[in-house]
Every structure is written in structure tokens, then in C-alpha cells.
Figure (cartoon, one colour):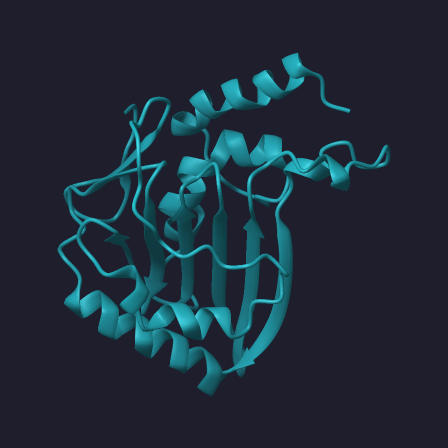
Length: 219
């Protein structure tokens, strides 16, 4: 089992996230801590985004980071799209501890599906409507103890990031959310946005750059 010092070590590793690039899975909690900023920014999607690449959308929902995180990847394949959902509630559910997998309490639940072109288009079309009505994401900054969606995508060979922050957007009215949730079989109940009380001591920040195609590091 992770000791107290081990848990603190995982938390401290998040400090390095601003300079560590995501290249693999976010399921392992140590890797997730080290690469979370890069994952949310879609650095891996941007690196592979070319004129001939397939579309790839990543939707990340921060429902007060310590309470719930959800992430959905939708990546184009022949005849449709691969859908991957990941979610966790408050980390550290020791009921999930096993000697064969001591990091289990800190991992994300996941589910996958192969969507048809029509099913994928329903999600992307809904997202397009929301993106068109959303405030300009360039320069926006969000903090971890609040509720927001960050969407990074390679669409028709162009990479871009969008932000839907509870202070600027009615999150309950986003059209793409129920479309994403329709295929989510993680078993983690969706945490609706709510008013955030108290101070933001210990919160971390993510800021979108001035061209909305990356994040500003070192905050």
C-alpha cells in the first residue's frame, strides 16, 4: 500500500507536470500526475496533427479536480471513431486496493467503444455548435477547484484548444456533453457543476496561450 510519504510523493510529482510531455496512458496515477498538463493541452494530438492525419478530439472535464475528473478521446478510424472514456471521483478509494495493483485506488475507471461515423458526427456537430457560441479561449485561465471543460482537437489537419469555464459558460447547457455521456460505461456517476465555496488555496491553474493552440507553462 502507498505510505503517507508515497502519497505525498505522487502529489509532489504534479509540480513537474508543466515540463513533462504526455505520450501514453493517463490511467496510471504517477504518470497522470507527471503529464496531466500536457495531456489536457493535447500535446500528443498536436504533435501528430498534419494535413493527412485523422481527426482526434479530447474532452477533459474538471469537476473540481479533487472531487472528479473525466476525459474522453474520440479518434477517427476507418468507418467511424474509437471512443475512450476515463473517470474518477475523489482519489484514494482504498476499497480498490489489491496487492497485485497497489496503485488501484488512484487509477481512473475506463470504457471503450467503436462508434459509427453517424454516432461520432453527432458528438462533433454538437461540439461545433457549442464552440461557435463560446468565448474566445485565447488567454483564458482556469483553476483546478472549479468546473470546466477543455477540448483539444486535430480537425482537418488543424490543432486548436477550446475552454468552457463555469464563470463564462452555462455548463449544463452544453450540447456535446450528453452526446459524450451516451457512450460512457465507466460506471462513475457524472458530477454536475455547482457553485464553488471557499478559497482556492492549493489550486493549480491552466492558461491557454494567445493563439489557442497550447498552454502557457510555468504558472
